[in-house]
Length: 336
Image (cartoon, rainbow, N blue to C red; front, side, top):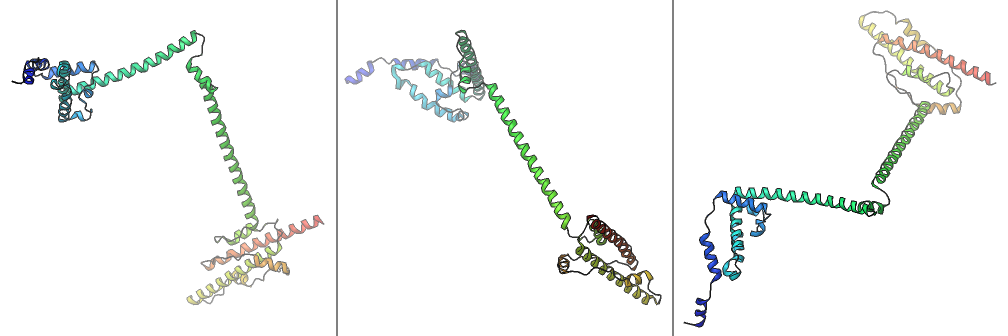
C-alpha cells in the first residue's frame, strides 16, 4: 500500500458524510409543500431565477429549468466545495428547481413577488415624498429656504409666474393671428370692389338669353359715350331687320304650303320696312371706337309669332335713347 493511498483512506471525509446524511434525509415533496415553499421564498424576497441563473421567460420551459439546475449544482456540489459544502444552499437550490418546474407554484411565486415589488416601489416613492417634506420642514425651522423653492428661485420666477407668462404669450399670439386674418379679409374685399368697379365700366354685353334686355340695362341716361351708343343702336337695328326678314320668309313659305295667298301680317312688313333712325356722322375717333365694340350674337325666334317681340323692345329702346339725349342736352345747358 502506498503512502498516498493510505492517506486518502485514513483522511476524514467530512463533506461526503454531510452530503450522504443530507441525501438520506431528503424525501420527495408533494405539491402542497412546493406551493408553501414558493410563498415563503416570495415573502422573503428570495430571487429563485437569480439563484438558478435563468431568465424568467426561459423558466416557462421545464427543460430549461433542469438545464440551469445542472449547471448551478456544479458550483455547490460537495465534490467541488469539499469542507465548504453548504447543505442549506444545496437544499434551497433543489427547492427552487422544484418550485419553478411546478406551474401552480411558479405562478403563485411570480404573483406574490410582483406584488411585493410593487409595494416596495410604492414605499420608496412615499419615503421620498416624506423625506422631501421632512427636509422642507427642517429647513423652515432653521430659517432657510427649502431646496424645492430654492430651485424655483434659481430660475428667477415661480411656477405661477411661468404659467401666467405662458398664458400671456398665447393670448398675444392669438390676437396677432386674428389681426392678420382681418387684414387679409379687408384686402380681399377691397380687391373685389375694385374688380366690380372695373367690370362695371367695361363689362362686355354677351349674355345670349335676352340680348335686347341686357342692352337696355347697359344703356342709361348717365352714359355719355356717343360712339358706343351709336354702335349699339346699329347692332340692334341690324338684328331686328334680320329677324323681321326671316319671319316674313317663314310666313310666305307657310302660306305657299297651305295654298293660302293671304298677305303677310302688316306689323311684320311694317317692321321690315321701318327706316332706321338717323344718326350723326361718325368721325375718325368714333370709327376707331366702333371697331373696338365687341360683336353680339342673337338667337332667332322659333316661330313667326315671336317677330312682334323685337318691335316692342325697339320702341322701349327708342324712348330710353331719347330720354338719354334729353338728359345730356340738359346737362350741357346747365354747364354752359
